[in-house]
Every structure is written in C-alpha cells, then in structure tokens.
Image (tube, one colour):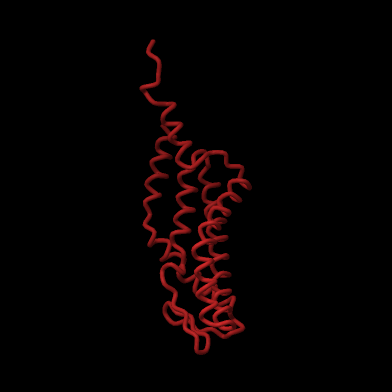
Length: 172
C-alpha cells in the first residue's frame, strides 16, 4: 500500500501549474543575468534589463518555465527514487537549467550589444528552437546516469500496477 500512497503523492505534485515555475525562477533568472552582465552596468526595472540604450524585456518564455516543468515531471513520474534523492535530483536539475538559461540570456544580450539585432534574432531563434528542449533531455540523462536511476518515467509505474493487478492474480 505504501507504493500507491507514494504514487498518488507524485501524481498530485505533477499537477503544479507551469506558472509556479515562472514565479519561482523569474527573479533568479533576471538577477542572475544581470550578474553575468555586470561589466555593462545593467539596470533592472520590473521585468526588464536595461544596458545603456538597449532594453531587454523578460517575457515568460525567457524564464523557461516549461523546461523546469518538464524536468519536474520526469523526476516525479519516475518510479523507485527515494524522496531524499528525488529532492536532490530536482535541486541539481533546476540549478543546471537556471545556470544555462542565465548564460544563454547573457550571451544573447552580448550578441545584441556587439553584433546588432539581426544576429540577436538569428541566434535567439536557433537556441530557442533547437537547443533548449535538447538541453533538458541532456540534463535528465546526466541525472539518471549520476544517480543510477533505472526506472523509466511513467512506464515503470504502469508496468508495476499492471503486474500487481487483481486481474492477473491466479485463483486458487
């Protein structure tokens, strides 16, 4: 019965709205980016970063709440991870996503300031469309390797439920 309580808790936690991750990571992303760009003396006003004549507005997609949510789901919906390890995996994974996102933003701002808006748009589109989803997968693979996770998200739970189903038990 312990397994099913654990599963229920994991499933319920998976319904945290994506907006929660925006709320959680908006300020660290904005201030982390400003820290990386400190030689340019950035100013922060609400959700914008100002560097001289350049104004960079941080819209929701800049914060990448969907990336955090995807990692959250992968960690929660993977069977056979103790809660202590699950929390550690989540914290490390979120830290890696935040660090890469801050570096990405700082690089894009650097490109805009030194190479212009056209290069900014081109690199921004390339990074956003190709690299961001790939990076979450790389972080997940790294985490399952380091923490020696053998379960497959969702599938391992479904397999467990099916194998312990009342319908499969032999009648004596």
